[in-house]
Length: 106
Image (cartoon, rainbow, N blue to C red):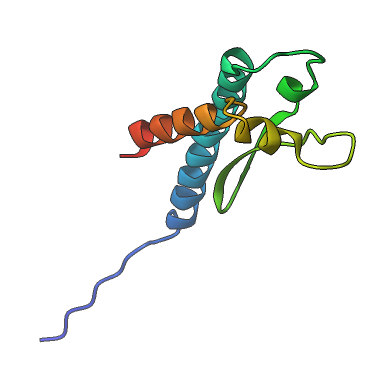
C-alpha cells in the first residue's frame, strides 16, 4: 500500500512573521512602560532632569534592553554612579519589566 500525503505549508512563514510582530509589539509596550516607570519612580534628586530623560529601551532579536545614556562631565556613565550610591535610576524599572514580560509570555 502506497500512501501519499499532500500538505500546503504556504501559510507557515506568515504565521511566524505575525507571531514575531506580536512579540515585538508586546516588548515595545513593556519597554515604554519601563521607561515611564523609571521616570516616575526614580528616587534620586532630579536637579537637571537629564538623568530621567536619558532612560530608553531597545527591542531587537535578543530581547528588550533598558539603558540610560547620561554621562557625567568626565564621560562616565552617570546612571551607574547614581545607582551605586543606593538610588534607583533604572533597576526598579528593569525588575518591573521582567515581571510584566513574565506575565505576558508565561
